[in-house]
Image (cartoon, rainbow, N blue to C red; front, side, top):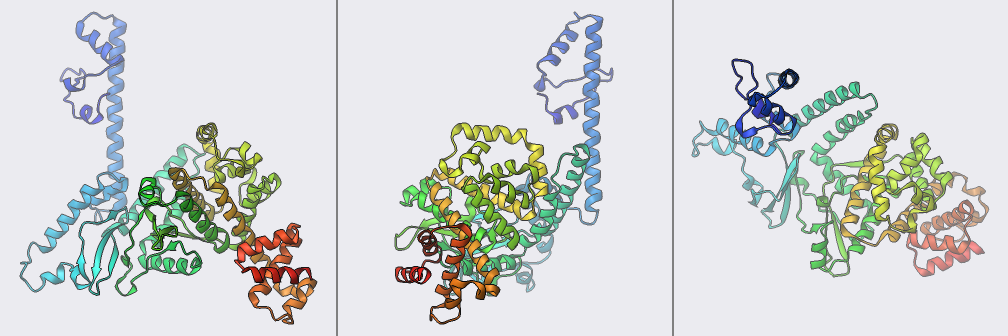
Length: 529
């Protein structure tokens, strides 16, 4: 295939014939036509065909040149002459590393070339990490589109990780969003069924949050307080005294990536325990608290063996992107997953439609579970997806692209990041080849029951005096602690609402509230008495 750049730079002949560089000799039909033309053995029809083909190629070149000029002009008008910078080409993420190096070098030379190194103003112009750190490694541990992370040592000897935002990322990000919006609007006009304008809306909402590192630090501390009951979770501590909106200093913690099965085998880490821990953690975030870390790619979830060797320890990083779920959304999402786990078709339809899926609720259920509709009908906890089912899902994804686009534009915006989170977690489980699917479903079910029971207790506290089995306990005559009092209320509500026998409800309560055996037995006696 002829390279467009070579064709555009090819010299044109004075007699109007098409000139093709020898190093880029055409193949196929063009080669046959040009071969006949050069040999002189061709008919009038062949000459006409060759002229037509050459004309089409020239017209294509003119069209490509016109489009290139139009795009370049529109880019200059969009950016403005005053804000134009070579690094603006990073909008298409091509040559970012080279351009960033060039810009940094240019800034350094322009700023410091007239300042002698021994001048007094030189230290003020050139930033000095030694003012904050006893040692700072200039080579980053990792880099992404928004920031890069360095290892450093504070003056008190503590090793820290320093997350530094790229210098021009704020301006560049705003321009990227404008370009994305222009391109999506153009595509929307050509393809009216293309429903992805929500991408721009989500980027406008979430990107400023990710660029504020102090917001990331607050999210990290909030999550630490929420899930402190999980001994397997580690969130690096924040050093507030040396952190800013663009520089985040945190505790340095090492570990292997959550999808690195070989690392876990070398360190004797059980991949099934890792998978179960991830399931417990994210079920707690989504169903109970409604505060969800939405970027769990393998680089943000590290794993290491705990100090006592009792099991794996998860290290959760990068807390810039979180989704806060409203109670209405969270509870309907709980009920939907309960219906999915129970293969309750009526419930799946009802709660999917409450979440905006409409008549596309079968597709919505398949997207949530990453299973076929037949598997959803049978029950997704009956077994893992077979190779045939995976092939079916992949082939149907392309066939149902317009419906998927319509569905994504109609569901609440809270759902979009949850779908992304689900896919990332499934990717980790797939890479680990774990067999913890049943325990993950059990964790989800427990968290759903807990979340719904808590909500029911909260909504019925104003009418608790009318609930006869709980009246004596709630009045304080029993002398029970508030924890057991609330547990008894939840136990009664679950028995009435879900029509469960007391023994089953008691088991669920002991698992959800982690009551000791003595309290559980006393709770059952009070309930039955």
